[in-house]
Image (tube, rainbow, N blue to C red; front, side, top):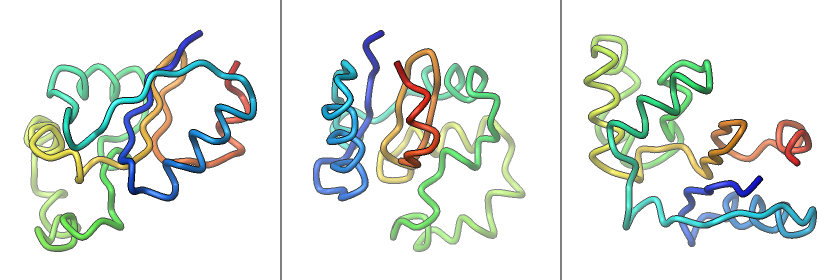
Length: 116
């Protein structure tokens, strides 16, 4: 299986995740999440396939998330409004975002150990 990894090159967590994939000989293709942010269609699919809440796809520790006061605004937004917001700027998306037979947001080695 070859995975798609949406990453931000300056992100240290993304670098650790890519290093992990390399060390474990797991094939992947990189996509810069800022230059080519996810589309609404992609996000809808990934959220559905992951079985996770949309909120888990937000980069809650990011500056833009904080500047936009999304902690307070997200609960009042519809699912589609949240997806549209994520699709509007790759910096809002939790990274790295791994897409394949599993969909993982962020790098938690324990979760990534299940990859083949």
